[in-house]
Image (cartoon, rainbow over all chains, first blue to last red; front, side, top):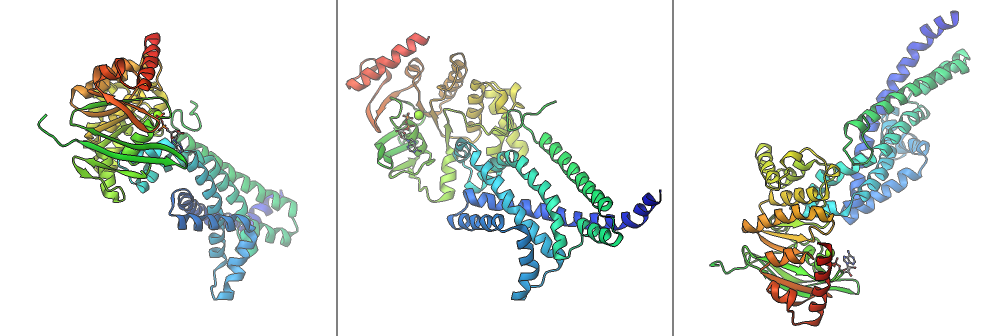
Length: 225
Length: 254
Ligand SMILES: Nc1ncnc2c1ncn2[C@@H]1O[C@H](COP(=O)(O)OP(=O)(O)O)[C@@H](O)[C@H]1O
Ligand SMILES: [Mg+2]
């Protein structure tokens, strides 16, 4: 009874603040990352050769460097050249760019899987390349890429806990501080884990809902009633 | 016909893929309202020819004129304007898989011609009606039969107001019982005065429609003339052999 009261009064408000910070990290990183992924994915398949190359290099580096190393570079490394980022900014930039590189892979794969004839048909109607990509190819590719993109969103929720390593105190950071302070590792980390599980479940539910909403007969995932 | 300028004039088109010379200098003219049919063995370059005419693949050599005006394909505006005037029907339909029948037809007028949505919609419905698919407008490609898909693709091309239609074996991917409905639509276009270049192996259909047939083999037009001559009384041995073969196939299947 005491225990519960303690958790509610001492731990819960702190953890809630951590959850709030986690959400503030995750949501913009997810949006920026997805956007970067779409743009670089399109460049890699249909871009001018120079853009194609640049987008390829972007993906190479940001998938190749461990995320923690990227965060360290943004936060501890950039001051060396006179750029000082807040912990929050460093984390959002780090997450967006890393996430974007993975999204880019899914989008690229999906664009390549669209049948060649779709582009020919669009051209034959007088579509320019850009217009064909945005009105015909991407809407198809996005539907195929969504399961992969969804996975990436789920990963992001969990790797957002690395923000703690650049002193942006979100859920995991709060949990660590509390656990050290009260010496209650089992209880507090179990709660922290459960909160991530809830966030992941909500995201999964949202993604499934979205997949159903945009499902098209005979296209990608069948729509079950 | 008073109008002497051909709607479409193709001059000496050449195209190679690596060492494979697919088109070795093909020329032809289409007069307004004229219907020309191309026949010939598989691999002879018929599809490549139609793709070249629409600049869907780059030509190595050759000139293309629409209403007497040469098309400079690196001018993007000119190219897209030209493509709107030249409708293309593909063997495997190439309907946009993520759009229903109505939106397949609508998207060109809206995105390319920039028609207001309501006007484009009216037009699209009219074109679908013309190909007999008014009741199937909300179906997606996966829910349509092959014959219906090809009719949607014809409606899609018509909604752009083409002056010429290029049809690449429009019925060869169809089950035999579905060929008739597509032929009927094409016949309808013909009687409406549409200028067409049609690749087909349906001999009966071709001879009833065409004013000229080209026999194409190995990247060249080997022989050309009125249907009766090419199909039943060709001068060139290869043409005769080929026509005898497709004639037999046709008789066996009907
Ligand atoms: N994209 C391509 N790349 C390489 N070779 C091609 C390509 N398209 C067609 N070809 C070759 O061109 C030749 C003619 O093909 P095609 O125009 O499809 O003939 P048809 O339509 O008369 O059957 C074939 O030998 C084919 O292998
Ligand atoms: Mg062919």
